[in-house]
Length: 55
Image (cartoon, rainbow, N blue to C red; front, side, top):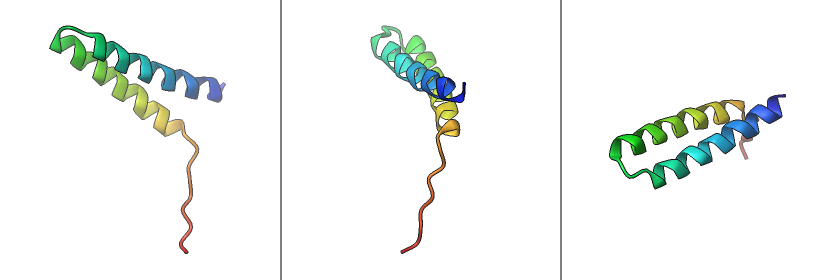
């Protein structure tokens, strides 16, 4: 289920960014970008943590 959620948030972010590009009014554009950022935050929070090793 978590994988499905991860893909869902990734897809919704992309869709909202596309909607923002298509929006003719500035208010609608901002609303779509705000939603895209919310989905991006959820998407990033679910992403597997990457560890960086010191060389």
